[in-house]
Image (cartoon, rainbow, N blue to C red):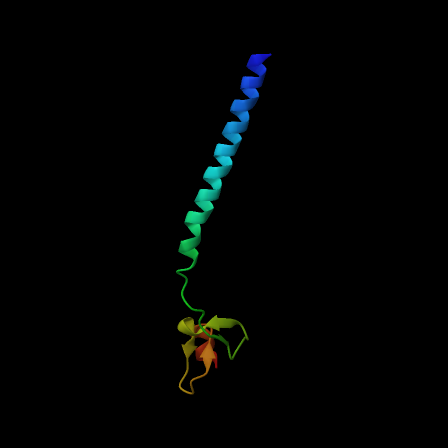
Length: 75
């Protein structure tokens, strides 16, 4: 009987230890998420309407945004 009680205590201790470790790992990952860059503006492609980040837009001579060079050539 005392071995059964000892076994239960060990299992509970291991479960508590595992729970404590997983909560520490989550708290260590959170500071990484705070280092995200600011959102950048989106522009709709003049040809197809797909939204594209400003840094990835292809611009024509009239400064109209396109999602790719092919759409910019087609106008």
